[in-house]
Length: 316
Image (cartoon, rainbow, N blue to C red):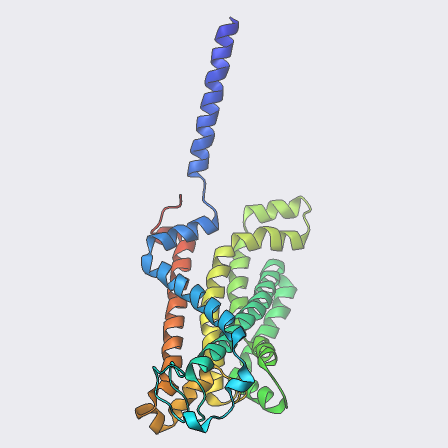
C-alpha cells in the first residue's frame, strides 16, 4: 500500500514538473527577449544596431583625445587640403582645420544633444501622458489645455528667438531649450495608450484593493506599455538628431566655432564647396543619412516586436 502511494506521488510530481515546464514554454517571453529574437531574425537590423552603437562609442571616446580649441585654430598652410593624406584623413576646410577631427567632435556634440533631448523630453512627456491619461476628468482636461497651448506656439520660431536673446549658450543650454517644446508628441501618444490601459481589469482591481495611484501608474501601467515607450524613444532620437542639425545649419544651433554636423553641412551653402571642395560637407551629410536610416530601421524592428501579429522571430 505504501509502495503504491509512493509511486502515485512520484507520478504526480513528474506530471507537475512537466506541466510547469509546458506553462513556462507557453508563457509570454520578456520584452527584452522578444526584441532580441526580432533582431536575430533580421540581419540588416542587427547590422544597423551595431553601426549605431559602434559609431556612438567611437565618437564619444575619440572626442576625448581631441583638443577642440586647438583643432579650431586657423592654419593657412592647410587651406582646403585634399583628403586621404596622412595629416588630413578627410581633408581640410577653408581655415585649414581637419574635417575628420571636426566630424568626430561635431558628431559627439550633435549626438550628445540628441541623447539629452530624448532623455529629458521623453521622460517629461511620458510622465505627463501617464498622469493625464490615468486620472482623466478635470486633471486630464487641464493638462490637455496646457498641451494645446504649447502646440499653438510656432516651435521653430520660439527656439530661434530664445537662442537669439541668450547671450552665451552651449550644448547644455540648447538641449534645455529644445526640451521645452519637444515633449508634446510623446505626451499625446502615451496619454492615448494610458486611457485604454486604465479601463482594464488589473487597474480596477488595484484601485479596489487600495493601491497607491502612483504605484499603479509607474509600477503597473508603465511596464505594460514599455514596448510603446521603447519604440517612441528610438524614433524620437533619430528625429532629435535632425532637429539640432537643421537649426545649426540655419545658424541658430550651436555657435559657429563649435563643431556640429549642422555647421559642417552648412559649408554646402558656398557653391565652390559643392563642386570643388566636396569633402567639407559631404562626410557629415552621409553620416546623417546613414545614422538616421539605421535608427529608423531599428525603430521598425522594435515596432514589429511590440506587435505580436508582425513578429518574425521566435523567442528562445
